[in-house]
Length: 156
Image 1 (cartoon, rainbow, N blue to C red):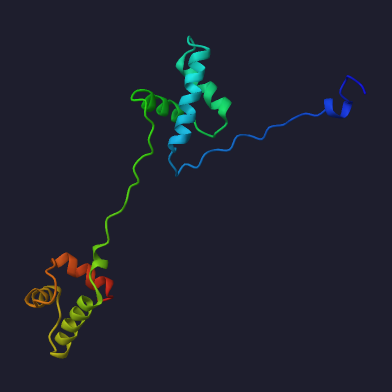
Image 2 (tube, helix red, strand yellow; image 1 turned 60 degrees about the vertical axis):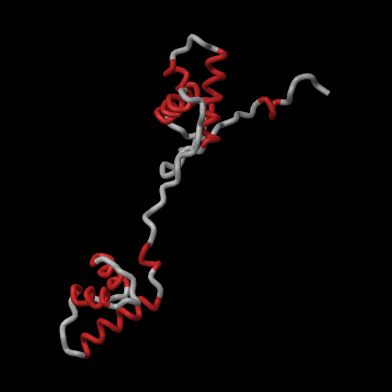
């Protein structure tokens, strides 16, 4: 056996693919933030007199996570001051209050509107609202809530 590697192994060239960019729609999770902070602390321990911008450039080049320099800078700025990296709170939408009305309420409103048509009087939103407020079985609702409920019931 030869001590020298063969020409086929020594002649190979490793080509790295370009780093993939991170999805812009998602936020950085706390694990990814902690990875960036750990890399920052390691660079500070190895070379303490390096400028901050050079450290950030070194982090973005070495980790290959697809995180931009400004994102690394912001994570370092936010997470090193208190020392805690947490995930951002999930933003939830407004609760759907129209789903709280069951079919009995919708049926009662439908009957009120169709009774007005049977009596040959035009059904306006204000007239329907007066009838709904006079009916003790129906919940008390505002004009805008009644409008949205009737819109959901496909009244025009």
